[in-house]
Length: 69
Image 1: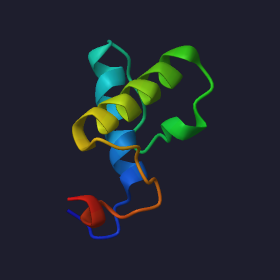
Image 2: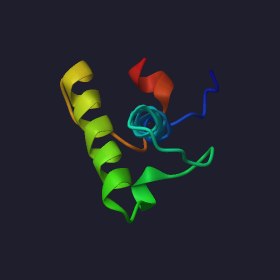
Image 3: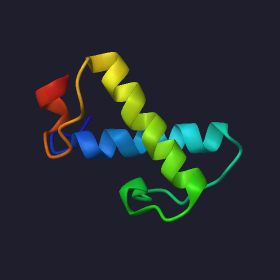
Image 4: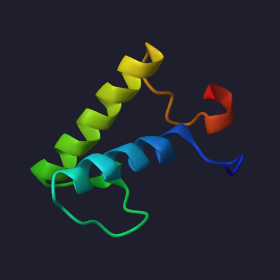
């Protein structure tokens, strides 16, 4: 794991997984925080909800992953 990976990067990974489970494809590195369509926005919302359920608080998007894990 890279030390400069941010929580935002992790949220994007979760959203990508959710989006793909729903049967969609997305290019690697896509930033769901720039999403425009409903399916992408839903995946992002679900990823943020999953984060809060797991960690018990909202994601600090600018924090590094090593600050959380």
